[in-house]
Image (cartoon, rainbow, N blue to C red):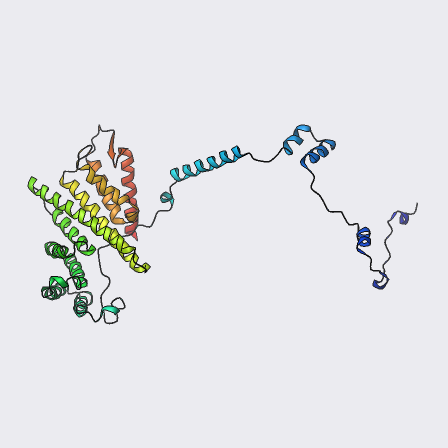
Length: 368
């Protein structure tokens, strides 16, 4: 047979003019229009698969109902919840996403006041503003700390106590300068006098706590009466800082500006840090007691404040925790298997690991 006869016939090319427009049904018949596909039921699919020769068990597994019962759904939700709890417990975010450690520094009203300073633009007509300009010019501009203190003292001597709140910026700068000059007793007296007029002022509470704590730490030895007196005063300052912190939080609720709110948050951090240091000081005055001794409460309160989210990224808080842990280890006798710290039984090795971690974190921030 001729090979040309085995080839399928190729339709002849027709001109567009020869093509007649056909109706919809004609077009469907001509181009081989497929009817609309309908979904085949699962049972029908399984029957067809069996007719095609598939194994019965395979067909049953492939086409068994994929509907999940309500019980299965509840069980799945329960498993998800349990898994989420386990992840949060064993993989806390602060272990992997720790905030960057930073120094809180001391209380300050900011940089030097100048004629062009925007921070004091609304207060340039205040009677205290020229005094602040002169103080900051001497201290920040010329480095004359002693003369700047003298200017502040001369100005504040003639201001009546009923106007002290209006002159608060001069008081604040004065206390900053006294702290910088290490005039602790003068700082304690000045800030204590201001607290008698405005007991919840955050700056006054901070600098009074700082002065009291520094002066107490400088004492080489204490009599029993001295220890008791200092403990009572420290307790009083701790309670006063609590009041100041509550006042700050109430003030923050009315701050519309994020910048002002951030400034108040920083004041709150520094007050809480001083409070933790005072708790540690009371523990020190009691002789760094352990176990079930009542003074352990002060130690644990100091640690709790340092562990709070407010001070999570504070270098000073980490340094205080390191100091407390070191004192615990120094008094840890070889026969002691464990000690209770913050209500938790702790092995010596675990506490040593905490000390090493804190030392590493503090060393890293010092490199920056």
